[in-house]
Length: 358
Ligand code: CP3
Image 1 (cartoon, rainbow, N blue to C red):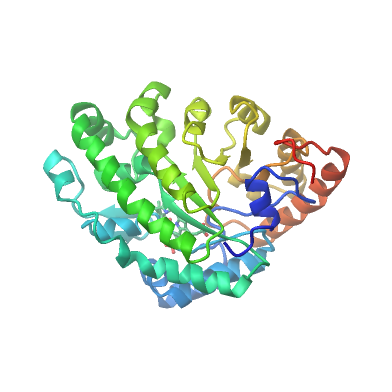
Image 2: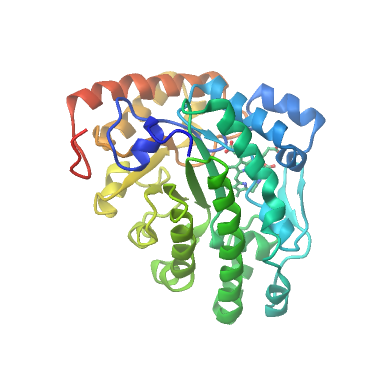
């Protein structure tokens, strides 16, 4: 951990900060000219594997936006390769996994002993942490077992998660074996990044909102809790993010994650209440608002901050990643607004979550 006293890391621990920290999922991406320039010469996976390029893309995005944390440039699907699954990105169509897992025998064949080969991501973390030192914290990330399993089983994105749920309901033993294998690989992968200097780990469970609370508890919570606990043993705070999770939040909180990431489908205050007002929260502006005029963007960003009420432990973010075509200038403007507007709140309302006195 290189920046333990930064406002982002303090907020992850539920501690007060002079202004609300802000960063964005997919802050490095196609909406940014500097990224498109690098992409002209390299594929996405090439950028991830060449640590100096991944570090450059990570650093540029954070510096251009003036955000309070740098998320390491990588992709959710990189661990699939070392488990024995080939994938590629089809332009405009998203990821394609070449031979999706459909049967118990396919699960048996997945490997868990090659996580060390993902060391190039830890190396990117090392380079970014060296660049920023204590000035800016670095976020490492991985997919959550459910969301990665959905890609592995569907072979790509999905609408109904039919194949995923079929395996889950029809072959619960193979499902659990898959969850266990993913936890083994993912925990080794992100713990190595924590050792390389990452300050916080975010676990993306982007698609878990397709489950009922009962199925979440039965099929997903136990192994996801193991992952969260293994990461916490590396002494870094964990952010657990999903979309469409309004009904799942109390169960997701049982993983022990320090911060819950929520999307715009629930008010930030309602979400925090659903969590028993415990721990920190991250979110939750609709990314499409960055395409609106500034008046609407500002009004809705202020609404998020008002719902947070100046309480310690709020990290401002979008409810999901920045979309292609987003005007960069609106993103920079939003960072400024969050800092300026929250400064007023921090002095007006000194509410502390964990009874601390700083
Ligand atoms: O700045 C950052 O946030 C760090 C980089 C990052 C990428 N992917 C790079 C990337 C992060 C955090 C991810 C996570 C990721 N990858 C998720 C979880 C987040 C989410 O959106 O819920 C998922 C589901 C993936 C898998 C994936 N990779 C998808 C669905 C796509 C979209 C395909 C497309 O064509 O848009 C990708 C590609 C990808 N990963 C891009 C980037 C910047 C798109 C741009 C490109 O092709 O260069």
